[in-house]
Length: 83
Image (cartoon, rainbow, N blue to C red; front, side):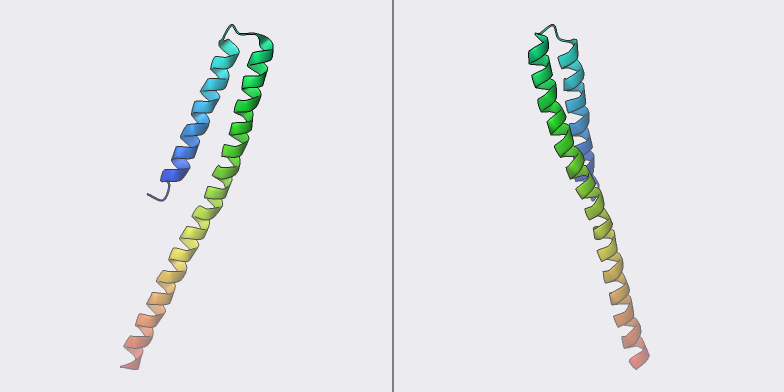
């Protein structure tokens, strides 16, 4: 569940890479191919930034989960000792 968005972004990146390969293999005018490839490379750059942000956010999610677990553990430990 946590990695779902990351996998989706990586899948989109693979799809765009296959579109780039298809653009090069097409028999279209080289100028048209270059414009199409340029647009697709721009999309890949955007996806790369989103993937990096998601990886950073993933670390924050695990850090928050660890902090909450430690906090709850300390509260329970304090309640047990106060009896």
